[in-house]
Length: 130
Image (cartoon, rainbow, N blue to C red):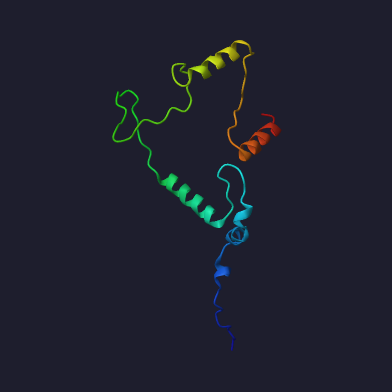
C-alpha cells in the first residue's frame, strides 16, 4: 500500500509571492526617493489599483469647433504646451524672444522629461546612438 502524507497547512507566509515578501521586509524609512517613489508593499498595491482604474477609464470626445467651454459635462483639457504669445506670462515670452535672437537654432531628436527613469531612458538612447 502507498503511504500518503497528510496535507500540511500552508502558512500565510508561504502563500505570499517573492515580490510581496521582499517588499514587506523593506522598511518605510528606506523609501526610494524621487517623484512619488515608494517601495512598500502597500504603495505597490495602491499603484496597481491606480493603474487598473486608469486602464478601465473611458475616453471622451471633445469637439474644439463647438464654442462651449463644457461639453456633455466635460471641461476642455488644460493647455499644456503653447506657442501662443498671448497666452501665459508676458515676461516669460519676452525673455524667450530675447534669447532666441541671440542664440543659434537648436535641433532636437528627442526630448526627455522626468527624473531618474528619464535619465535611464536618455542614457539608453544615447548609447544606441540616438
